[in-house]
Image (cartoon, rainbow over all chains, first blue to last red; front, side):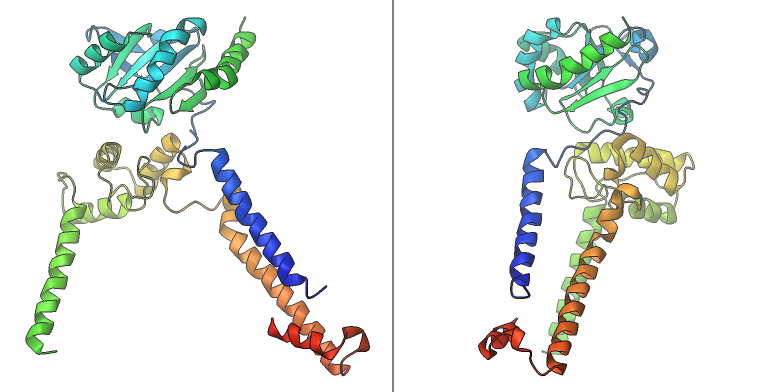
Length: 180
Length: 156
């Protein structure tokens, strides 16, 4: 028995390290879980990209659930995500608000003209100050906010057809069930 | 060797330190006085850049890190304490933004795990020592097996 002890120790250690590898391949260690899930979305009031004289605020969007998609023309991954939004945005059944993050208005408009505009409205946060309240640390990010203004789901990274099917759609369906 | 060479080496070292200090001041902020600047440096060194996750806010050149430094500075101007500023960032970016994880139930394993492993090792050692002492006292049991076996055990 005591001769087996080092071997058992080795197996335990190997199991521990193996678990570490498995754990880190299962999820992206760079993803920081948002502490804002199930908390009220921060108060915001941002100008529309197309018409800066108009302001979209948290209060003006209350009453029905909506998605906020953080994007920027300088964001490479946003370009990969964009075709998915173009085809799926209409099917989701909730408005998709575009959140133009730290972008020059001209660049953003040109980018949307090039790639198409899947958003029902686009708001612009040029300084990134409001984005900090949302805990944005990179684009693309997507938030699902319910009718009461509570953040219910956050996706860090691009929305893919799989993510939409496996995470976003169930989350939206749950909201619909809650408030018929 | 010589005194002159030593002095030159020292000068080079000092210069390198100065370069390091300069590199840290990535963007000049209008600090009220030196004490406030030191407090700012100290605070941003305890905060993590979310983009380049192994860098502190103080060291990082990332865009977001610069925005967050400005935010920290703005909060300092408002008279917020270090703890309030940390809490402000934790509310938005979770505990991950702190370089030193706080001591709370979900980090107990992180803080005390190494101690647990150390304790487990101590138990194994204690059991082994006691068993060997007993075997030695009884003058080597027949049950302990033949002599060569004992030798391999000693190798461990």
